[in-house]
Length: 73
Image 1: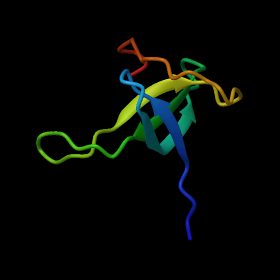
Image 2: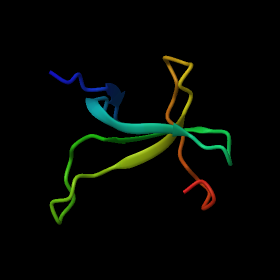
Image 3: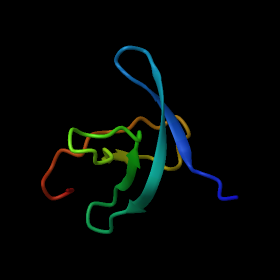
């Protein structure tokens, strides 16, 4: 059985949401680490919502940071 890589976030209403990690990578250009993940919710068209953030893989309490520049996207 394949073990899923998950993490839990707490939304603005204080509810815990389990997210599945799709993949992570470090950019040679920006020297930052990125995480791509989903909470498995679907948009109006039925597509699974996917998110990306900056994170620190060496910090177990790392906060997800917004990707703010076009260069990073």
